Image (cartoon, rainbow, N blue to C red; front, side, top):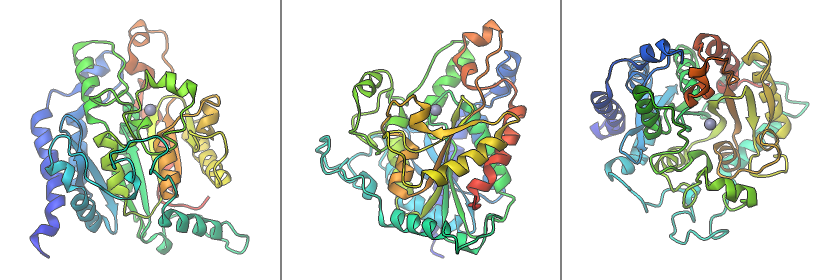
Length: 404
Ligand SMILES: [Zn+2]
């Protein structure tokens, strides 16, 4: 195999090691545990955990760089992970090599119109699903037919060529999502995925996470929601972006959606890494709220495959905790307020994936004043061991492609 075929794998590992060299610090987990905030790991410790996954056979690729130049790392698991890591890394090599602000590179259907320079609302940006998305929807309809009884054991030969996408760390304060994600990947790394690929980006917003870590180390109680430019990355995906109502516009003053869909390098990198994939499952881990949410967020109308989404959401919700999580569409969860630019809408509308957003844990604060004034505690339970293992068990069948 030519040496260049390994370029992006090497890029992924090299970028991780370079970041580790810069960010290796005294463990944050001990400091936080002492302050009653739970044993959460800081950025350097999380990178070490990703490095251990690579040591155990996961492939890494560098899919882009954050605004401050932190690596956006994808972890690939499954039969085709080596090829996938090469392909995704190759395809996305440009933001890494193009350095800061590698803008203006046309990169696939999902950014059509967004990068044509017009940036005009309702312009050339056609949110129609791709052919791959339509094929997946057809295939799922076949499976739902009464003639097609399928076993519900998960991975099998039919999984070949399918990809599950897992995201976390989009919102900088929601660290339990990242911990749950890494625990899920550790489990998946030991399992036969039957031809299915996992493409996971555990830290979508490293700049935001580092800012939170800096605040925690300094004892500052700050609320952080966006990336280094203050853009809420979960309003920046190309989904219903121009359908913003009045409330959305007002909210937009607080939760900035960015200047156009995928204006932020973190979102652009994900869109690009996924552009040639056949994605049928997608999971995004947030916190808190104890809910399993599915599309739509940007529309009041149910999605065509709402029943299938609801069935999976209910299954995860029941298994997630002794007292089940809630399961509903995002727009219902948000009291009927439409929200544009969410990842689950984009993953569903663009890729045809069954898409779940899990608000991990219930956000119970207790009565300790030190927790009440600390935004980190609003999003992350003190006892990680109580929340994460049942969630991982609840999510495994979904991400492995099990039928419901
Ligand atoms: Zn969130």
